[in-house]
Length: 236
Ligand code: TMP
Ligand code: ASP
Image 1 (cartoon, rainbow, N blue to C red):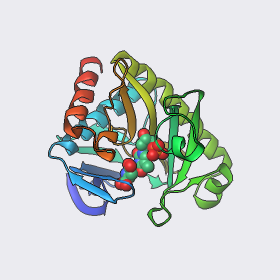
Image 2 (image 1 turned 120 degrees about the horizontal axis):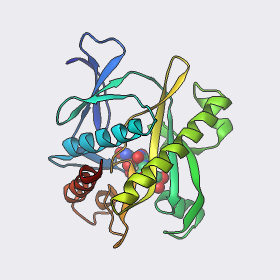
Image 3 (image 1 turned 90 degrees about the vertical axis):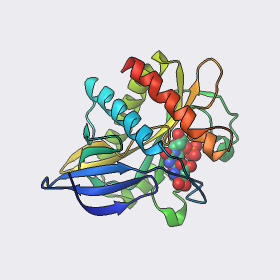
Image 4 (image 1 turned 60 degrees about the vertical axis):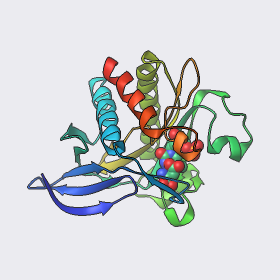
């Protein structure tokens, strides 16, 4: 299924799919990083869990009318996806205050946002992925102002669907990060949606069921990712 390795990121490897131009194989790794790669560790099973969880979520979104680059799960750690032209933005949607927004703006953790807040970060490791505004995004990337509006409204639609999904399984969707790409003139949801890229809190106990347990060293990453997968499998 795989041909040449095109790119290796912090959490995934990207291969050209053999004999299928326009398609890629994403291979999820067991590595975890935080703070722009400063903190690193390997967790046996993480690649499988993120692949399973991300596949279930992209399938759920597809069933609810939202396409993405995802085509199908191939095996425990790999997905077949459509190749997109990368847009170097991290699009973060926040329903509840946590993480960088609490430090940056002095907002108390757990403050609810309604309407949800959309933030844009410029994907550039050397700059530490800075927060940028809409004009910066149009200047620094290959998209128009109109396409940026499409990206933001798609991000809010994903938020609505994922809020419903996670709510059914007793999880609060605190915030999450999306990436988009382009296929010709279409804006396409891409990358992954997993506990690496979302903050997920148990609704009752507010226990963290995401990568914050690794970032903050407060829990067992594999245990909480397993918990998310089990809850999703019971529903999706
Ligand atoms: P932040 O509070 O650190 O800005 O993170 C917001 C959300 O984005 C959170 O769910 C974690 C996710 N995220 C990533 O997926 N990748 C990143 O590099 C960062 C900084 C955050
Ligand atoms: N993924 C980023 C890194 O490797 C940051 C994060 O998720 O906290 O540093």
